Length: 581
Image 1 (tube, rainbow, N blue to C red):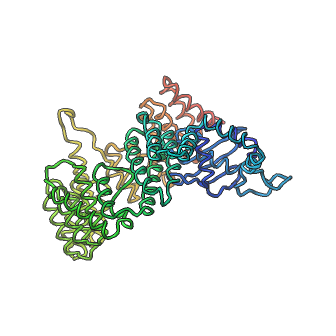
Image 2: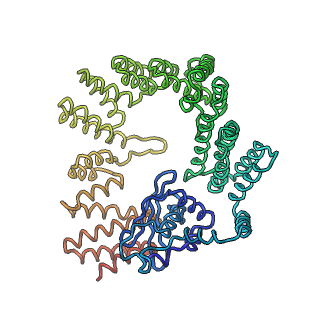
Image 3: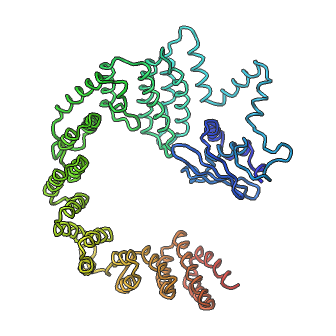
């Protein structure tokens, strides 16, 4: 079934040469998981920056494909699909017996065939073939050039590699070129990995740092949706760590080197913090690293309340916290956090640290301090923390009061749910529910009555919050009552109608019919499609009640009303044709 539509030529044609080559790399690196033929589809998972789900199938003589990666979502035949296609060609699929060829019992392995062919070729032919391929493949060209120059006597390896790094990270166009950038940089990483030997590890430390710095800067100009560039930069970071373990540099000098790297600029994808390099630093190196960080920390002092974000302060703070975590010193970590109390959530961070340390009273004290410090800019997460703490201590009235404040400020479903949780714990939910719904009604009416320069007249009350609560409580009667009194969000109306379809189809139909005109009047193809979906639901519900004739009459009324909207009428005709059968 698949042998006519899955060929190397077709995979390359669908993907394009560069994407095909990258798919080859994925296949060659065993990134394709178990390949299964299920029904008329080939299914597999491919390990990239995350695990992607891939499906291939025969589609009227063509190769159909689907992948969960962003590139495929944009309609392209991606590298992951290429990799799965190659895996199938290579015989990796779990096949039913009738899928095997009768002659051999399995499909031929194209890679084995190619290898067998190459083994019979003369040396000069293979060299010529490789040179010709390198002329078309920049990545192969760079890899071979680095190998050749490294092998030449008297070559300055550092200079050679730096030129290659600069070539891979120079001239990246703004917000594009992620594929090419990742390919070129990965080729350099392949060559750098060959330096992972005792006699060249020190050189690799220098070169990987240079590559990381340039690559991080280049990434500011690249839209790396699939994370391919990030993957390569992280690989460079791994090479740097391995080279440091192998070279065993002087711990004091190494600590100073790492500190300069970490505070000099804000690397996004690779870190040079002490936790990452703890093994190489050892006790002596960690001590020196701490001295350097603490000196910077003392210079900074506590953060002023009006100070803008300071990236240098943020990096030094992060390093101080890393050192405190390495030492397992919770009090030092709290002291570091306490140097910046410019927002309520920072008090919450400290309260949670004290909770983790088994000091609940200290946690409560910090949470209460945070609430008192920001009366005009409270943080609901801090209120939630305190409400839970008060409940544990039997301070029910205070817990309920904090939860009520949130609901009064923003009477929505989230705060209603919080209120129910606390009130249920106290056994007073029925009375609190009645009070909450009364407050919500007052709020809805007050909001509708407001006027301003831009809204000189009162508006219709918006009962969306009440309908959302009714849906959560599975109380369609309350929802119906609410929408009869005012406006409501379309999404919520559709959900309410869906809840009513089985027990009360007439009321579901009424809601759908109420919505359809307002959606069609938006005059866009997407709105037309949304309206058609609702019309289909109306048709299904009316047919289930043997009301086919009234549904046809309804369609005809829509046709007359919206005759000028040609695109909508075309979609409506597809429903009318089925209804008239």
